[in-house]
Amino acid sequence: MHAHATPSVAGARRTQSVLRISLVATLAYVAVTFVAGLRAHSLALLSEAGHNASDFLALLLSFAAVYFQTRPASDSKTFGYQRAGVLAAFINAGTLIVISLWIGFEAIHRLSAPVAVQPKLMMIVAAAGVVMNGVIAALLWGVARDVNMRSAFLHMAGDTLSTAAVIAGGAGILFTGQNWIDPVLSLLIAALILWSSFGIVRETLNILLEGTPRGVSLPTIRAGMEAVDGVINVHDLHVWSLGSQSRALACHVTIADIPPSESACILLNLHHVLKDHFHISHTTIQFEHVGCDELEGCVVPIEELATHEPGHHHGHAH
Image (cartoon, rainbow, N blue to C red; front, side, top):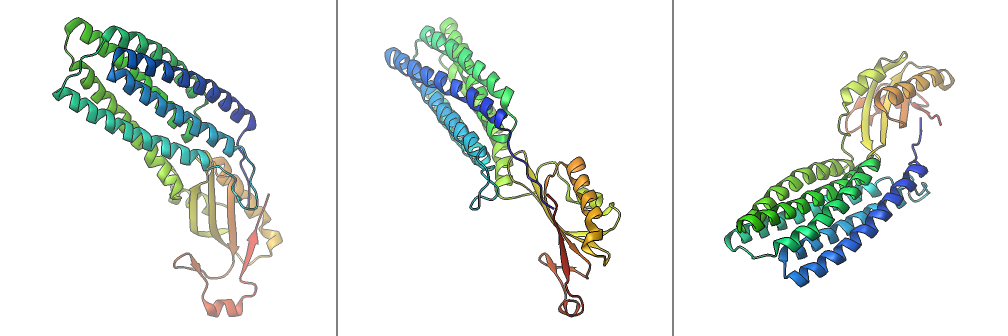
């Protein structure tokens, strides 16, 4: 039994439009922040420019991933490019972890050696950044349906918070003259980004390593399939994610010794159970009517193969 789920072309086009706007706005802000940082001799603003440059690269990576995900399957890429977005999310989250560690390191250094800044210029430039990053984050949230776009949203949301902290830090320094305010806020933001990024890394690694999808219980799926009339048992069961929104299943199902034409109803019912109750549309189910011992998958005893020909019959439905 095979069924395929293809990404929505209309949804992909909308996502690409949002990413194009985000890319242009982010690149413009990087240029403004970099020039302002040089003129004000502000390490904070130069760091902000570098942070936003990483956002630009993250958005560019997500844009490329969305493009590849819409490409159809081929003889060489039989599942298409559904994992392009997952790979992009993994790289994005990885860069976020590196950035948060760098922010933490710099913040600790600044606590021991405070850096004098121009708080007014910091606040003006950062205010523009909050507006821009906030709008981009809101746009990304509207299309964040998979792990790739969620990681891009997380990137921009984290940058919005860090830019807001620059404003708060600038105000604190302006009114109190205490330069330690900025690194303390940076440490808090770095911890938040780090915690959120680990969640994305864990989810994407599970998909890339073909682990059981989050929230999926193999015993529950097996019980649901074995409740179908005509099914004796289900074994050699595997469930994995093709992308962040699609799942695949492969298993062996033991049924009575009946002709393949009579097993069509069982296949159809299994398909409905998997699709309606577990949201699994891409399935490969192999029917068996001989004894099958589970050892490293399915191993049929040689003596039974000698007395049962053919030993297996396969069920496929499109």
